[in-house]
Length: 46
Image (tube, rainbow, N blue to C red; front, side):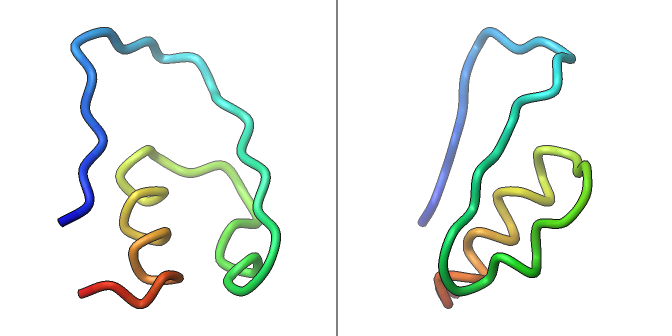
């Protein structure tokens, strides 16, 4: 299981740097749920 949680959130954009396999999956601005799901996909977790 992969999980990121917090009790303090803002609507500010957060920069993300990606290197290695799967970098092509991060080429735009995305919602936070896309980021988590895509990291899981890139790491080939189920």
